[in-house]
Length: 132
Image (tube, rainbow, N blue to C red; front, side, top):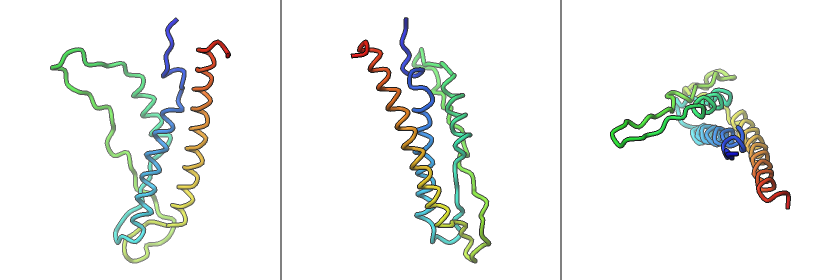
């Protein structure tokens, strides 16, 4: 019986990567809170997760050195957020309070995904060791 680590870890490894990407985007928004004309961006976690699931379903591999590399990354993953407040006059749409809350929530969800992933790894270790 073959053991698939990818199946054993489930979706949690991909969720962790999607959370990390979202944290980067939100941190960029916070860093540009005072930049005139900057538009707040965000990633849709659901879209990112679906993209990763779709990508993981492909089983393409290079079997010859003249085969082209296939990049399955989509473009335009970041989308502009619809601002909750009126324009402040400089064209910046970053609301620092909203960004901080989103960053904190994303951090908690990242920790939850990490906990699930750790649990999966411990379960696999226990299965491999025969429960010892």
